Length: 204
Ligand SMILES: Nc1nc2c(c(=O)[nH]1)N[C@H]1C(S)=C(S)[C@@H](COP(=O)(O)O)O[C@H]1N2
Ligand SMILES: [Mo]
Image 1 (cartoon, protein in one colour):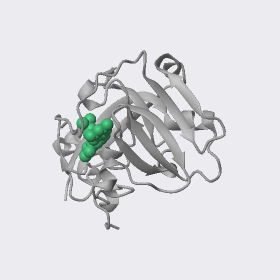
Image 2: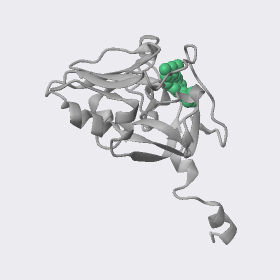
Image 3: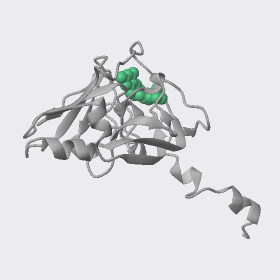
């Protein structure tokens, strides 16, 4: 079948249908807000980012110190377990690799609990936070991250369902075994890979 110029002209990068994990729809330009707790008014002068637990050297960065680290940007898609996906988003901040390298994970560290200032938690395999797959971000589309979306700072783990991207993140705790976070205790999957449709406990 001949492909017309008009059809090709509408395409941006890989086929958008191929970028939609099973059971997801494209939310377009809208970006739903999903928050279990009250949105905090986080003061960056008091906020700190820590990496602790099973590490050689527990580390804590102030807002200013975090911004002095080499920056890193994500451009791509995000996927929420409530079935919306959003294409072509840009976040900027620092790679989680940079923070982990500074703290030095111990050999027995295999899982991480991400903690928010609000008490929200979510668990992840350490391997899902390394290798350029996860960020601590404060900038969305070239502007400060909106408060409702976790501003001034959130975790970003875009290859997993978005509940793993803890808003108002303040701490990454390295652990030797997996422990369920907030949504995971409430029936959601411990890993949450959208391409495997790991939505609930018991899914593959
Ligand atoms: N602190 C905190 N982080 C959170 C949540 C939350 O309720 N509290 N919800 C999670 C869920 S279920 C999703 S889908 C995304 C929603 O992010 P958004 O509101 O920016 O779309 O944040 C995740 N991070
Ligand atoms: Mo979600």
